[in-house]
Image (cartoon, rainbow, N blue to C red; front, side, top):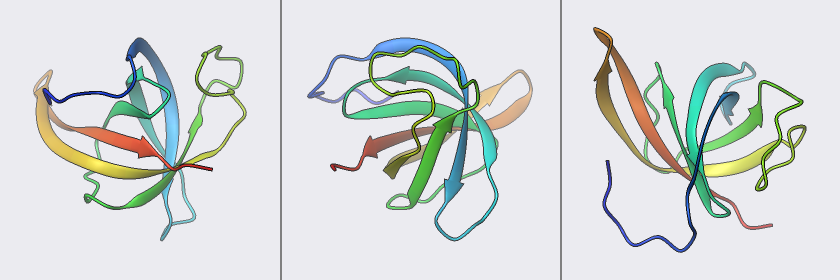
Length: 101
């Protein structure tokens, strides 16, 4: 896990999300682990490159979160992506920064 100075407090909140890179027309599943006003950490079976632009939305449209509306599709940038091992399978921990509007 990254130990860095953060501009916003993280809210630990686990829920299913969907994400899509700008070069694909498909949505992949992932699990969000925490979120803030500035970004999000999630885990996925797919590797993403630093700098990739992705769209994210909640899989559960009824999810209640103080930072994002559940029906909102938000554009963001991958800041880091690292391999993690969980339950005998490889996943990737991904840190993203929400794009300013």
